[in-house]
Image (cartoon, rainbow, N blue to C red; front, side, top):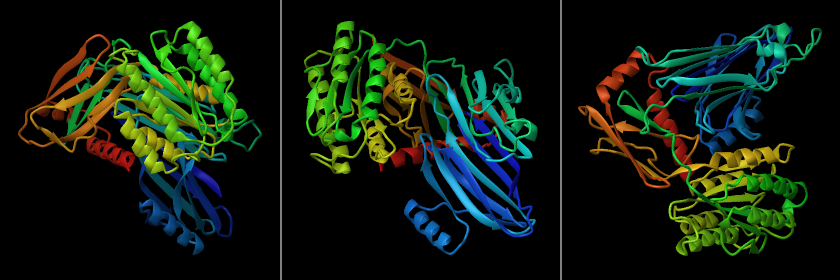
Length: 536
């Protein structure tokens, strides 16, 4: 079976990306053959359409609930029918795979569409496209179009598989500014290698195309209140202020030293942890707990991250040995209690960000072992005042549990795999939360003018990130949408107000001829679904 054509077309409108993958497979044999269509897509993406056309007959896929999908997939496979299922695969990707019988000298065309919100991390948005045709493709191309109402400040495109010659095949065009209508900025990236350029060597049949094609960009921001866009009664508000002073942090690291962390995992933890300790500024406070069946602390309370304390912390971590069971609930409650007591005793700055970073590789095996009870207890203890970040070690970690534990407490989870770059993985994660800038951020839309609002209160705003709120404008005659953003800064309260003329903004959006016109309503639905899944 030969892949004759593979098109990867992505259109990004105001951070919201829609990717269409089209693959045309030709059976060049005189007998029927099995064609396999396999795609890796981001974990944060939602599949919105799938179809396959064989001998001119098009079949459109259905999206089902997970349990129903599993059952339908198993039944279809047992009957020898074509079926596809999304499965977790690797750090950041999901896998979609479908196989179908293609007749002699026939053609199969597969089309998969998925959508995702590009979230800002470390000062840029990242679009990641997995490229893995596993053979030379006669007609291969990647086409990315980006449209932003704010001026694009930079755009970069590269691939993990690109040689010097293939790098020259990448084309980038960046146009548009705020000087004249339609007040938008565009970028166009293409990658269209010939079959000869795809080859590992001039006489080889193997392909170089095996890895990630990555596009990164950011936009310029003119107001501290953010940017609001309105289309067809729906709005989205992007908030990412700059020129703020960093808040001091209170960080408690909770390290699993149960028996399952023995060997390479505990060594990786020490290496990465040492690097993080060295990067802590002296105004931050730090505490360390280690646990198996029991919990023990480095010090009774958090201390300044000065050179002497950092040296002592390294020595404490270096002596950790892995043995015993895993009492997750007791460890996290001990961390919460330490932060609570230190704040009450004024050990910590009044305006500061409290964070727990939890490192573990498995399920609770000691004390309370019910996932739901642990989540409920930890959430009640943290009281919405502390953000919890979970790092799951190993391929067998119960990541769903750790992710829910983190998301229910204003944080996020990351997998840390047992490969050579685990220290960089952990360091990269820490960089995302190293610079809290605002505390208790609340975006309030005035005069009861909106409904179906997505989350509009956030514990922390970090440098290089972005807060996004979407909703529906209830009053069709409303002329001005007013928003007040309030938060706590390091030295004084943060408060800013913005007013947006609804009619003028909608006209601007129409003039900009957005790539898909209902994108704000779709973006609102995307965020709403994502938040509902977090609460489950």
